[in-house]
Image (tube, rainbow, N blue to C red; front, top):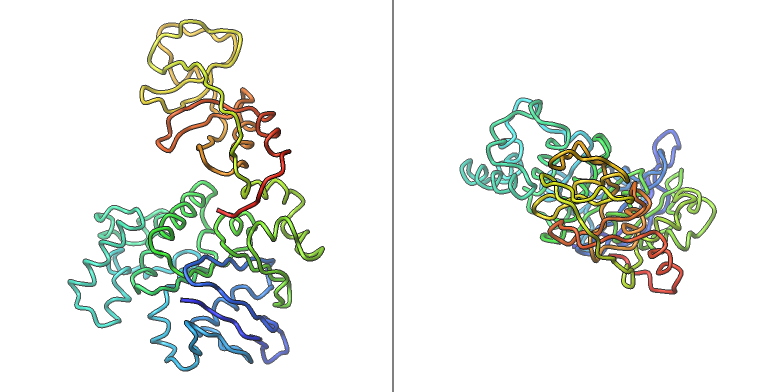
Length: 364
C-alpha cells in the first residue's frame, strides 16, 4: 500500500512551520526512513499519515485515497504505530497489550488472545512472557511487544517513530535485525523515523533527509544519499565518513578468503606458535584468538583467549569484511558461513584490493 505526500505543509498558530511543502511517495512494501536533526519535521510528517497531526495544507494519500475521507479513529486502528519506549499500558499484561487492537476491532477475547500469542512468537518472544507486565521486561523486550502490538492491526502500513533509540547499541542492532527479518516475511509499507544516519542506511530502501524548518533536502536510496549528496547540508549530515558507509552497498565478490588453521577450546594446543591462532568451539564457531607466544597448560580455555573483532558473514556487503579485518587483534577478519562456522580469514589489504576495482553499488 503506497503512501503519497502531495505538497503537505504544517504551520502552527504561532507561525512555526514544522513541515514545508513535502511531496514524496513511499512505495508499496518498502521501508522509507525519515532522518534529520531535531526540529526538521520528521515526526510531524509521520503523524500526518495516521491523522494524529492534521496538515495545514496539502494531501496525504493512502493507497490512492485521501486519508481525510476516513474517520481518524478507524484509520489509526488500521495502521500499525510504534513509538519510543513502546508506549505499553502498564497495568495490562503483555498478552492483553498486544490484543488491544483486535479487541477494539470487534474480535472476541479468545481469538484476540490467540492472535496476540502468535505475534509474540513472530517478534521473537516466548509465549510465556505474555503473562508478565511491561515493567517486568527489559527495554528491548518492551520494544518487541510494541512491534507485536502494531502488527496486531494486520495493516499493510507500519509507522515507527524512533522505536529503538532508547535501548543500548547491542539491543538496538538486534531489534534492527528483527525488523529486517519481519519485513522480509511480511512486506509491509514502513515509514521509520530516526535521527541516526547509520540506522537509516541500514534499514531504508529509501531515505528522506529533512532539514530544519521541515524542508525535504534529498530523497533517494541510501547509496544515492551517501555517494551523491545534493548539497553541503546533506553532505554534512551524513558525515565525513560517508565513503566508508557507502561500502554497505558494495559486493564482496572477489575478496579472497584464506583457509586458516584452527585450535579448539577444550583441547590441548599442539604448538603455541609465533603468530596469532584462531580458536573455535567443537561446532567450529569462533571463540577468540590465542596471542603469539602464549603458554597453555593442558586444555585450551576461553580465559586464555583474546576477544576477536567483528565477524564477516559470507555474501554480506564488503563493509563487513573490512570492519572484521580492522577490528581483529590479529589484523585478520574472521569469515563465517550462514551457520556461524569459520570458513577462513581475510586481511584489510585483500579487501582494499577489491574496493579499488570499479564495481556497481546496489542497495541490499
